[in-house]
Structures are given as C-alpha cells and as structure tokens.
Image 1 (spheres, rainbow, N blue to C red):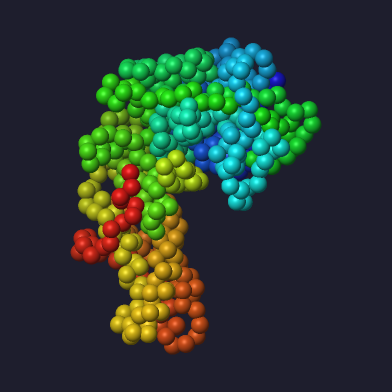
Image 2: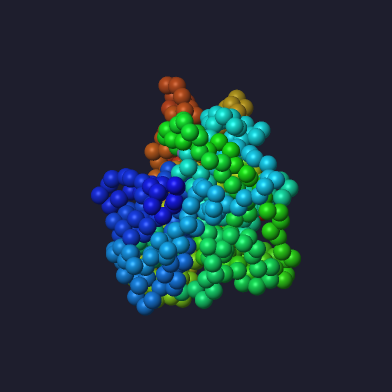
Length: 493
Ligand SMILES: [Zn+2]
C-alpha cells in the first residue's frame, strides 16, 4: 500500500552529497541533514516544500518560543506522532480514504498525464516531449507530485476548470536556509487561524467572505481526482523515466468556479506570494508577464521581481524578530513561477535564487540602480548599432538589427541569473559592484559579436569589436533614459 508517510517518494539531496528518496516522516525528522528537495522541476520542489510546511503546521501547530529560530537542528520525531495516528489520510491508493482525491461514480476518466503540465495531453502540440493519452502513464511518485502541484499551479482550463485559490498562478517565493529544517523554520511563523488541511478535511468548501484559514488556503485544490490502480506490469514512466507500475488513467474534473464577488470576497493572503499595488490602487499578486509579445518582456521581469523580494524581506525584518538572525547573516530568497503568461497559456517554469544582504534598513538609492540597469539593458541594442553608416551599410544594418535585438535580449536572463547569486554585493556595495555586474555581459557580448558579424574583413572585425564592447553603463547620471522605446513588458497586465 502506497502511503506518503513512509513510502519513498520524496527525492532529497543530503548534506553529504548523496541523493535518495524518502517518505514524509523521514524527511521531517532528519530535515537537518537534508540540503534540499532534489526534484528536477522547480514546481515540484516548491510544491513539496509547501506540503511539508503544511504537515509541520498540522502536526505541531504554531512554533513555541525559540522553536522556529534554532537553526541547523533537525525537527524532533515526537512532533510528528500525528503522522502515525492519522496515517490513513496519506494513502495514495486503495478503496478507503485517499490523499487529495475524491471518488465520484459518474465521472469520466482522462489520462493521468493531466497531472503534470509539461506532458502534452489532448490536442497539445508535441515538441520535444512525445506522449499519447492512454498509452503513456505516470508512476505513483509522479502522481503524488502532480497532486501536490494542484493547489499552487492549477490554471484555468476551460469550463468548470478553475485555477487554485491564488487564481492565475502568481510568482511564489520562499526563504531558503542551509538545510530543509532551516528552510521550513524560516516559513513557520505564528498564525492564529490555522484550520484543517485538505488531507484531514476533504470538504472542498472555502469561506466565501471570511478569512481563509492558513492550512485550507495552502492545500485547497480546484480539481477532483481519483487515480486508477497501477498496472500489474511495469513500464517506463513518461515523466521521470523510471520503470514502475504505471497509472495511465484517472478521474479528473474541475470543481467549478472558485470566484467570489470582488468586494465582499474571501480574504486570503498567501504567505508565499508577492502582493503589489497596481496603478488603480488594487492589491493583487505579482505575476509573470506575457513574454511572447515583445523581445524584452521575458528578460525585463528580473528587476521587478528583485525589488518585490527586497520589499517583502525588509517588511519581514521589521515585523518579526525571527528574521533578526537572517538580517545579521546573509540569507536567500527562492522564487518560482511560470516564465510567461499569455491569456491562459503558460510556458514553462523558471526559478531564481537571490542572496540577500545582511542589512536592516533599505537604502533607497540602491533601488535607483535597478532602474539604471533596466534602462541600460534596454539601450544595449541602440549602443551596439554601427555608428555613421553609409547608405549601403544602412541597408545591411536594417537586416542585421532584426537579429541584434532578439540576440541581446536573449542573453539577458543568463546575465541576470549570474548576477542574482551576488545580489547581496549589489545591495550593500556601491556603484563598483554594479559595474562588476555589468561586466558579466562581456563574455556573452563577445560570443554574439562573433555570430552577428562573422568573417575577417576589416569592417567585420571592427563591427565585432564594437558589439563586444557594449555593456550597461551603471554610472548614476544615466538614470533617466528618456529616449528609450516603449517596452513591451510594461504594457501587459
Ligand atoms: Zn515517474
């Protein structure tokens, strides 16, 4: 019998570098020895972390004094006795109570691959991942991951298939410690209204007007699922590639609309979502933008997310002494999201790790550098264009420019990924640190210079040198880039 408490389904990376699969109980009681969850998809890693946090709340309720501030220690096994006494909540299969599932007699079955977004189902196009409904299936471990993703990453998928409690999947963030135990403790704070998680109370109703209890909001799922029993023979799982007894079909349906009237609507503040105030003064969650409509929309999201992460961090430091130790030491914020949202199309998941500075108060002019960075990154294309071209060159240039723009924007996410790991230097340091960050463009610009201007003529070499020299100029006088074109990334949402 597959039971999440002791079945080995969570992939973990131990502090000693080894990787293995373990159950919930081992993950929690040995959390001090675990570096992190080792699933390859960031959506799975985030979903598992949220689930383990919900289990911690459910078993131990709120942290007592000092319990959440001790770092580097595992969580005592007596905290988790409830996992044994109410173990039947975590049965994945069988006729009785099942984890995150509810049986309905008349419901139609669909392929189990609906559980994982990256596997093509129905009429979705095959690109690199080829899968056929009813032929390919998932191993039980992958089914668990799919069930855990439902509260966080469900998207609207036609009539009756509404998204989760956060509606259109927002950008999620979580503090990251040096072990699984530390990461859990950093999110474990006193919460008055805890409520019951979905596995303990499968009643799917959520309050229409009142506050949504924390555990209800963290685990509420907008889908009704009932997995078929695994097949007798083993086969290759279409998601993880392991040989196992596959589940090819399941009952899969939406629960209808989860919307409320805007004003009297339910009150739910997700602890792992950035809330921002829009131009119309509405408070809403921060989302990925539509990156398909413009060259820079995908890359242009970085500085906005960093700014929001910093604001959330500063607020936490000021409001809670739990974060005092974090403020003294360096800490990290982990961000997971869909990379782009266009209507209800969601194209792949992304993650960032930001190292945060050991500081207490936000220094406002550091924010200014983000604006300079944003402007400069956008102006790189203009800077890389040939100067004083003659008529003949102008024509060539037009053609070349159509390659220049997307190429320069395409390298930006890589540069910002490198820069993200040194964010603390940027925020505590001065202009030099930003200048160093700008230099991260150099090897990439050299590489694209070679491809945009190949050949060995004097003109080609000159052009190559020109392109490879272009990097953001982080000097402060540049802060108002008035001549810049309208950005595609800004007009969406
Ligand atoms: Zn699998």
